[in-house]
Image (cartoon, rainbow, N blue to C red):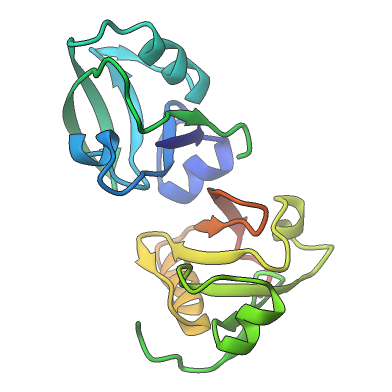
Length: 210
């Protein structure tokens, strides 16, 4: 399981009242974290009733837990509080990592939004950006250097997997997610992105620029 800090902009995009806790960026399929009930996009708020500050705090506390102990994690899942009870294993094979960085039909093969050029994943775009067949979403083809997306570190070849809770399969899905955020009075959206450099992460991006 990979986690990252809840920055102020990510908290705003998710509708959280404060930037506390740790955001679950990825969960290994069938790994201990997945079997325990963690899901991508969960925000870990407390461990055994004690509030956590950030992702480093979570990593430190988990490392200090005794094997065989049952631990309660308080999380926020899509705006709703819930609890997950986890029995700590002696040798977890699903590494908990802290990241300091913070098939629908396509309405069109490409589009622009938030200073990003977006394209559906086709055999041609996969070859152009050296993307394997396992990744699905919308590839970023260009980034306006003056955009908030550029400031957040998004780059051509990165693949947008989700916008908010919406799975992205075409540029139209991104545009629909932006419209939904605007209708909800939000100034930013939360993108789940597979980095071309490896790994995944969440990025809160200003939607003021289209």
